[in-house]
Image (cartoon, rainbow, N blue to C red; front, side, top):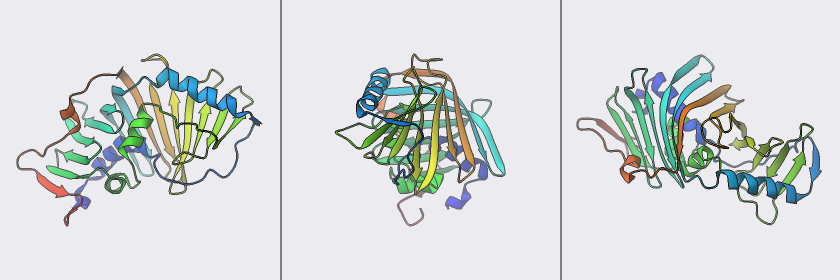
Length: 267
């Protein structure tokens, strides 16, 4: 039944879910360029950044999305809601504001509604179920953490810090899951996260810090060199620390909709 998804719907799902791809494990092998410096600098960079964005418990926004992949391009608008630790909702809209796709995930459930196809998918909020739509494993908690610009905790060790010629810094965090490489500019802003899914690189870049919310990026760009795919999010509205109704992160099938159980025999 999953084959009933149209190419356009798949692109919408990829656009929604690609923001959370940093969720699988592999090692960063080659060290970055630059001079190795003491660990104290890396801890201070992460601590200062966490002070800037650590108070963010939720974010809501309206964004223009572009997805470029071999042989296909998608452009559209989405309303995104994310709440720590693992609540996420995305609605893909037509130019006239008509919902084309709604995806909702929480700690327990994943539900997807495709109104045009009159199809409703439901199942556990597992990496495997999200993989069926995005082709890459994804945990809701990883997705939310990325949208809130959260960095991994730096414990007693497990990371290396490198000074860059442009005044920025690179941190290899080898004790996180997955191992990550964090890029900071000379002013201490997080500008990129490099990670791996099943051994293949993914790069998330952050731009336009402070354009909409103080210290917070307004543009995101995720690229997968192996898949030759780039997903861009350009927010026109952002609000933080809103108190969402619990029902926003639950989704029920409309009457008469075809229901597909992702964990059942017809999933």
